[in-house]
Length: 161
Image (tube, rainbow, N blue to C red; front, side):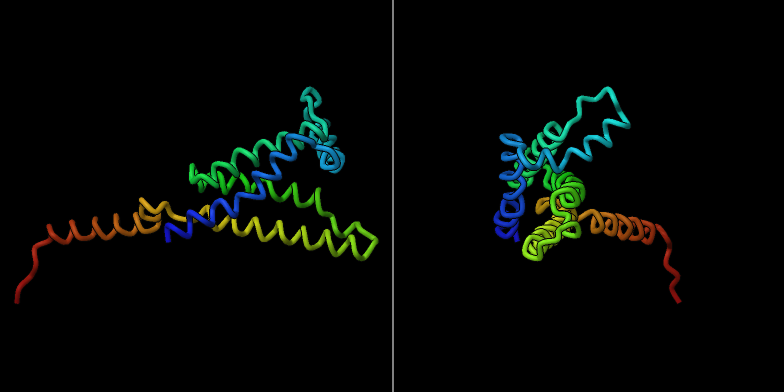
């Protein structure tokens, strides 16, 4: 199973590392799509230097850092959760297939939308992936309960008939 984790985590993280680096390097058309979100944030916090470009770069930086952490196995559950949290706004803003009138563009955007939904599912599953060097949290809890029950049973005198 460890070999599978070694291969799967970088594969899952690859799109975030690449996409995050591209968003930092050139926010370009992503910034225009993010501008309505930036405008909404600006209304809530007028003093923040928020615009579509900054928002795109911030999201890209978070995805690059968390993607690299996931790929290298550092804080893998936390990084998977952070990546999963970045995906809903990115997906909603980046792939609004419901607004497209051209059937080919609509189909392409729908594919990307559901690809992102699939990635969110994979990331959420990765948040549950146990560290191979530690028992999964539910197993540790069960062992503690069983261990406590065993130690209590050791101190109860048995009744012999």
